[in-house]
Amino acid sequence: MIATATRTNERPVLRFPKSAVRRASTGVVVVIPALNEEDAIGKVLVELPNVDRVIVVDNGSKDATADVARAHGAYVVEEPRRGYGSACLCGLAEIVRLREDGTLDPRVVVFLDADHSDDPGELTRLVRPVLDGDADMVLGSRSLGVLEPGAMPIQAILGNKLACGLMNFFWSTDYTDLGPFRAVDYAALRSLGMSDPDFGWTIEMQIKAARADLQTTEIPVPYRRRIGTSKISGTVVGTVRAGWKILYTIAKYAVSSR
Image (cartoon, rainbow, N blue to C red; front, side):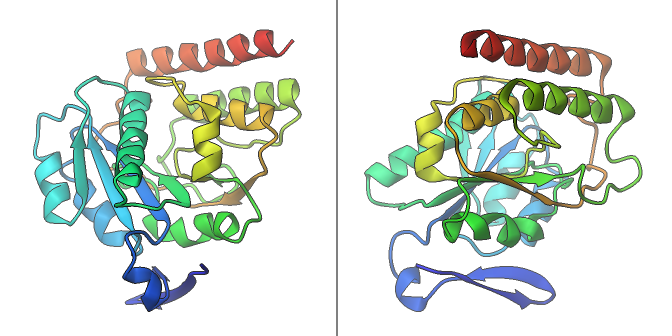
């Protein structure tokens, strides 16, 4: 089934044949982890192209994130156990459940953040290589794209370069970013056996993809200043914890590879 990209009101739309729309699934499912993002999540959902299902995983928000997401048509599930990876794992578990009961027939899963830093309009470009069978995973690279001033603090930029450099050294990859905006073939994603419950989620996926010889490509994506304060790079504690977990994850898989 091939989708075609068009534009409606200057926003990219992923359109599927009418016969496919009548089926339970069109193949593209979006997972958005969200924690206290009531000011941003609505904007993200409005800017998303038309896809089969948008699953917003409310990761224990104390504000109206879940209500705003539902008001914008998202399918909301709750994951009280804090952690970015926990929220992503919850979203995957929900996809599995919906697939087993015949509600979904996923071909590609897209992950993006709820803070409006990613440009949802780029989704069409991300999923195209996967839908066409040219890639198993497509990473939206902020390093190759245009960074809005102040979008990434210097510690995030330097940490990103260090982590990618280490991965490229150990696994002969060409990664330039650990960006959260990514599209992955559903079957390939299931085969990776993802497990990290927090900051190591993105790098675990990239390391396991390299070890499994998945066909991975990067495309440049713009990156904006997020709405609100980052839970990771916006605090010293968050930055240290994330940096430690990323380095630990690299070391763990490097040792097991040898």
